[in-house]
Image 1 (tube, rainbow, N blue to C red):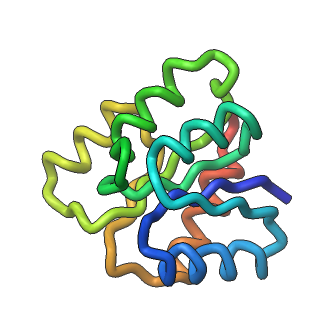
Image 2 (image 1 turned 180 degrees about the vertical axis):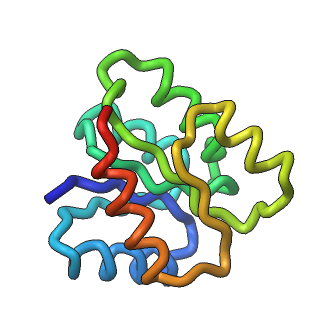
Length: 123
């Protein structure tokens, strides 16, 4: 299956998402701040990064932009998983390079469906 990097500073939510994705057969790496997310993305070249917007040390939108500007991460997918639900936030995330946007609270089942669909899209 895929290698997925989860970046969320809420440890319980991070663990829930990791368990759901691992149960679906994915390899998961979890980090808890934006700097660590970018460092792991550059080092590991995951298939997908699940990013919270409001991360310490570097927010998810900045991390998304940095991923998109790195040619080595051109095939890495980005899904924003965030409490920011305003239409302008969704627009900003897509403009930064996110390919999916899921708002908290969320259904773990819906998240898995979106992850599966995103990973199945041609690159």
